Length: 65
Image 1 (spheres, one colour):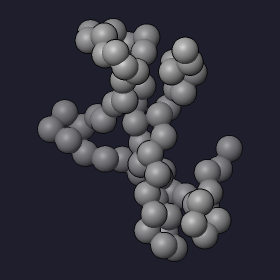
Image 2 (cartoon, helix red, strand yellow):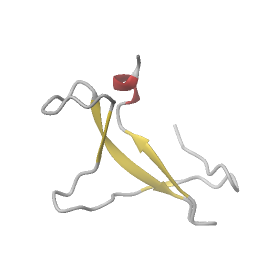
Image 3 (tube, one colour):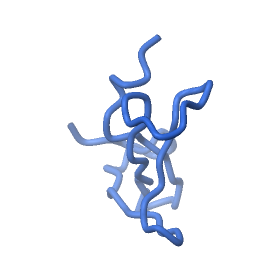
Image 4 (cartoon, one colour):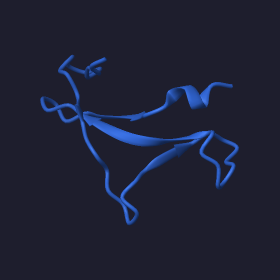
């Protein structure tokens, strides 16, 4: 499924944010360290038209209550 910019409806481009370890993640609160059941890799999606950047997790189902 293609993600579209909420500002101008351009199709967003999946990108990679960099850090010292090379991976950004989101973790469901309260944070349970050393578990992958409630965390997922985080990716920025960038609009090539207006520059708006939106962040999405790879596995949103891990964040269900």
